[in-house]
Length: 339
Image (cartoon, rainbow, N blue to C red):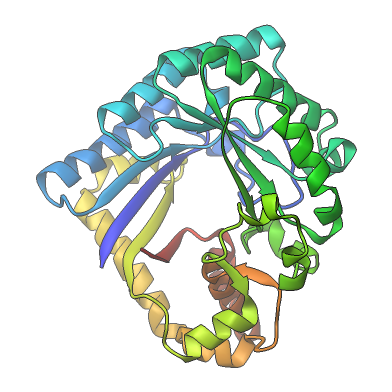
């Protein structure tokens, strides 16, 4: 099984406080400098080049659009130089409320440094979206960004989230967005089962809710990734799932671990991550056992398989009253993915 190490850096807090937030409360006291985080990434890239070429490395900055201009240019150039995932893609969700002049300056930098596609996320229309994002004017702000994107030769990627309370307004949202040129891709998806989104499971649509939507929405939903819980249960019990081939480790660089990550040999850091994963797997039930105990064989809410693994495992740790492991799994610092 190969390893994928994502080294994540938070230069600032998100400017929104979305109800489904998947991230932890990273405060200013947690942060290190951009250069400190970059040095750590460079160490891992050198390790990949000289020791373990099959290990995949990525550098992900959350809310990267809020970086100072010089750091933003350096970050995009760095990802291009090492051909890292997402080198030509950037999300502008949670961006501070910039003036149009500031937005144009930002988008001009993106277009000149190799960014091709900009992602924007929508939770509804107008005040419905704003209440979910917990920022007044956020919907109109995203539409403004979408219109300015086209002025700089950039394309737009849209992530539209599916919730029971907003299914009826999706056609209107699509019509509004279709009036703006420059669309590269549009994805309708369901919330990951993690972070604050765990509390929104009652808003998760069922299969019949989704199939009643218009064709122009259905064609942009990945029904291979998202299936009813009952269908995943059947596939698990029938042993129809692909083999897992990639271990995914997420390292959030902060002032508590930065010196360790800069000092310790990369192979020892990776071995420690692997050991933690193996120890966790020893105490956790198999996927079949989890499905037997916690799976709803008649459930028609829509999930990705990863979400059900997290949901069932979370229930397992709650039942075990294992508070330490419960805190760890809710942050999802490490996982195994299907590839």
